Length: 447
Image (cartoon, rainbow, N blue to C red; front, side, top):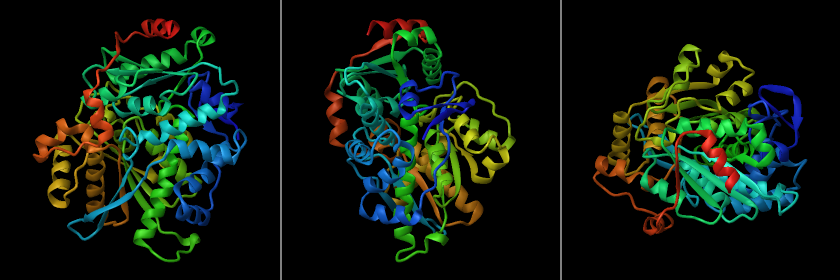
């Protein structure tokens, strides 16, 4: 399979070329030239055996021209050696089951471990010359940086440069990015996430620099970060199907489920939309945001109006101009009506996020991170408005990463996994830069 820029469908690129470039030459995002179909009966059969078996089946449809089944399997096995469980936390006040898919059981306790880990291993498999040096440049509003750093840590021939906004990530998130060393280079930017993202885009659009420096991105704008995020939608659906509709189910009449996705840069939800286009029985998506409600407002008005991001307690979602909006448009043929048919919007304030955290804790004994609580709030609102019961929300980060938000709400400390607590005793190392891509350009050329 070949890939095109969403801004120019005439020129096609190989998987390797698209992955190594990150952004297309015209500044667009790479998309598959066609969306392959999956057989849901095969998805169900393979998922019963293992997540990896199912994942190889899906990814081979995009990568089979570049990597054989064995190499795809090896890469995925190394990238995702952890569970992705669907958890039933109880029933709503109306007796409807409450399910969340926990995506935070990877090494950095965030959903981005899936995409970043897969990208690291697949990119390594695609390197034709193992001595080839590549710089991974990425911007983060919270969890992306730590997941990318971990996913590429100590991989030969690859340096990682992570930009994060000063004072706008949690202390633990900062530790995850600044304490690894070796091939991981952290940069604290005196600005917002939007500044960090702009700097990255300006570097990728700098053709003269890219002739001298081999640089690509590990944000969800990169095809290899984006595609693997579709995998847990398939696996979560199988777990839900097995829990709610046990026994033999006719693959031709599978029940549909609605999924609420806490959203910032919209790579996660657009990967779910890709899974739906491939044949996964998803009835609807809920694009759940914090106060940065650009997409929910777009879904109401049809007008896309990006604006500077505002800081919230769900900081990984503080994005004012989501890059993957272009991917969503492309998936739906630039049709606003088609997008709205499959997608609802929801947004909530910091006060509502805290209320969601408290309700989950008091009513169900479940501790949620602020981002995941946005998903819960969206599900609760949707169930009350529609009376539907088949709804899941994604839990995107471990609550221990946000103790400074959660503890004042619940009165209890979230238990910190050992893999995170070990970091708190380490000293971080980082560079501090102004939000100027010229300064970043010099940093990259001096690496």
